[in-house]
Image (cartoon, rainbow, N blue to C red):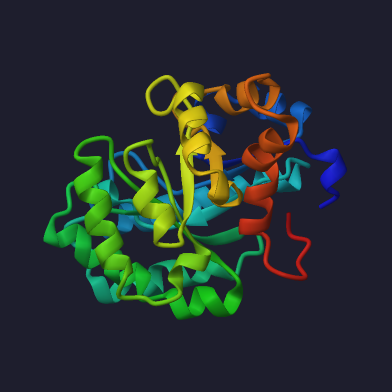
Length: 267
């Protein structure tokens, strides 16, 4: 990708939901040069068959938009709120592996913990067990942290991830707040900050970057837009509260270097 002609990478959205609910926003993003990376999250998953169908539909949506000239990418994965009762941990690799061969698929996500149950930890571990495959293919992990009990669940996540040495270089832990980002950055992970009225504000982001100037290059910003669309990353791009170089890192450069494998032009 020619960096000079791209403005923003929204590093975490749900483009399939945007396409369904507010399709006019596709044109809006395209006109502004925004590249979205769509993470997997479904509604109403009850069976393994439901999940398999959703993941296929998600990939098909991104492929269709790409064929129509919209630069976009996706992560495929099993969100902790999308775990069907009939899904076995040993079936996870078979379910996800085919999507990793798609050049538009940049890795596995949105995975993580919601409440930290044993069942969630089991399915998370089954996905993290694919880390050697992702490392070999130059793909990434996108990790979810919940709104409730975020510090406690983030601590559990970091404990689970510690069983996979070296994974921090290709893993972003998302929805970080001023209260949780310190532990994520100290462990060497990339940190996502979701900008929206219901998550982090630009004031929160100001606090984060002022406290972690040495880690600025590992912070990715996004909106997590889906059924509701947010313009906050574009507001950051236009904000005078951040120096131009800092804005570029937070809205484009950091995500570009995280998601683009060496010697690759996929983005």
